[in-house]
Structure formats: structure tokens, C-alpha cells
Length: 438
Image (cartoon, rainbow, N blue to C red; front, side, top):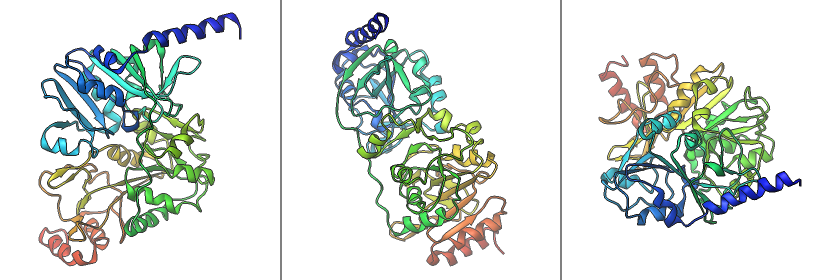
């Protein structure tokens, strides 16, 4: 190693040591009135969050979180307003009780929304992989919206964790020169194992997998039903992956040669995602893996990018679907449960592709088969994640209903055919009363 390289390396390490501090000291860099932005689940900096819990100088601050791993902060709203971008079990009750507020969004728009809300007073805190020889920290599992905001942040505070996988992708790195303070906190990342699959999940997964052809590219949404599809893809070949959440099953399908991304029109040879939540096995598979690109959400979910994937199959889940094809994917009558995420991005984006298919899947019933999820109309106050104009195909454990290009009466009949048999007569009567069927 020549003298110049040695000096540069020593300088980078010197910068690192200069900025290394404790969580309690690091969070004191937050000024009143600033907005604090955390990455998605495994990217949340736990020690810095604990520091915020004890911070006495909070005043008119805001904390943005998406699928949080840790409980909400116990602080008055005038000190810290907590805003959820997508609910998890950690903030769902708090949102429904009014402690946490929910920010409606398309996933692709989150960077621009946060920039509009917080430009000029934005603090980013993130868990990152250790610094490399060039002075860069990787956002690892969670570039999502944070990657697109790094250059616009007023203050960047990092929590370095040697368990965070180093990943590659657009704007995935943060240079030591951009960092105001950093701490070291080596703990296991939050994990989410493969969802437990029941008979309904498997029936839905098998139905959808039959629609997937060799060479197709997949977008797999959050939850058991979309992931069940991957159980039935072992006989497929040359599949691609362009999605939001990197699914746990990627490891098996990549090792078996099912997913090789060889037929993708863009990012050929690469699985593309914007965040990952999984097991240690998934995180280890991601670490320094050049076949995976962890890109910002305004890339993965961009209409322009999605439209270039000719043979995309986009698979997402919902809570209920009405006769028009409108999907409520966020709220169970008495409780706000999640948010739109990227469902609307992909369900609209897939329509711009050459041969793409957009699939919404859901169980035909809820509450132990007491309630039909195929309904005549969504309940009052239900949010629509996928509109009647963007719906393509709906799948339950009773089959598929292709709605794209269909009239209201044709949609109604198709949906009743995949409802639970015990509700079909009642639904038929409702459809006739509404004038949708003769």
C-alpha cells in the first residue's frame, strides 16, 4: 500500500474516531422543531431511539417510522409528534388511540413527501453496516426512502451494527464525511421468519403460481398469502424479482436456480428490492451479495421503472373487495390496521407493462368464516388502496376473477363465483337489489 493510500485510510479512521460518541450525546444534536426520520424495521437504530426516550430537550419535534420494531416513545405530543408511514404491531394501537398519527402515501412518494414536510430541518438516524475502506456505510436492509434523502438531510446520525448486512444499490452508501455523529451498537437485527401458511394460503398460492410463466418477474407483497405463491414456484425457470420487501423464500429459490433474473429487461441478473425483514439466514444471504440490489423506493416503485418490466406479475393482498373491484387493504372496520404501502404503485404500474398481470389476493371470509370479504360495497369510511380502474385479477381460495376490461355486472358475477359458497346467494340478492345483476 503506497503512502497516499495509507494517509487516506488513516484520515478516514480519524474522522470515524472523531465522530464516535454515545447515544445520549448523539441525540443531543437534535434541535427543537426538527423532524427525525428512521428507516424501516431492521434499519431502526435502537440505541438512538432509547436516547430519544430520555432526551429532555425535545420541543416541537417529529419522529417518522415505518413498520417499527420497537415501541412508541412516551412523550407529550407538543414535545414529540410520532408519525407512522406504515403501521406495525408496535404502533397500531397507539395510532388508533390517537397517540400516533398516520401519514397517507404511495410508497414511491415517501421521499418527496418527507422532503416537502421537513426540508431544512431533517435529521436522519439509521442503523448501518460498518464503514468500508472508502469511508462508506451501507444502509443494508433498509435504503427505502432514506437513501433518497441522505443528500438533503441537515444532520445524519448513525448506529453502526456489525450484524447489518452490507448491500449494494443506488444511493445505498453514506460517507463518513456526511455524518455528524455515530455510535456502535452490535446487536441482532429484528427478525421476521417465514409466515405460517394455512390451507387457505396454500390454495391461494397454488392458484396464483399457476399464472406465473417461466421468465416472468415477480413483485411479492407483504404477508402470508403473497408469500405462499413462492411455495409453488420450484418447477419454474429464469424468474426475476423486482419488489419492495425482499422475501425470505428468495434464498431457497435462488439456490435452486429458480430465480436468476436472467430474463429481466432492466437490472438483468439482479434481484431488486427496497427493504428486507427476515431471518438471520436472509441477512447472511444478502451480505456482500452482488446479485442483490437494495434500491430507494422511488426507484423500485417508480411507474417509469415498473413499466419497463414486460412480464411482471405483481401480487398483493387486501382486506375486502367490493363488486366494483375497489380494494380496502388498510382498515378492519373498528381499527386502522396498515397502510397502502406499494400496492397502488404496482397495481397501477403493472398496467403500464407490455404483458404484466396485477393480482390482489384475500381470504374469502374473515372472523372464522362469519364475514364475507367479497362485499357489495365497502363499509363507510373504508380507504381504497386499489381503485376499480386499476384492479386486474382477484384471487381467493375458491379461484380467480379477472376484472380488468369487465363491466360492473361481469365483475359482480365473477367475484360472487370466488366468494365463500355460503355467502353467494346473499351476495347475488344484494347485486340484484343494486341493479348490478338482473
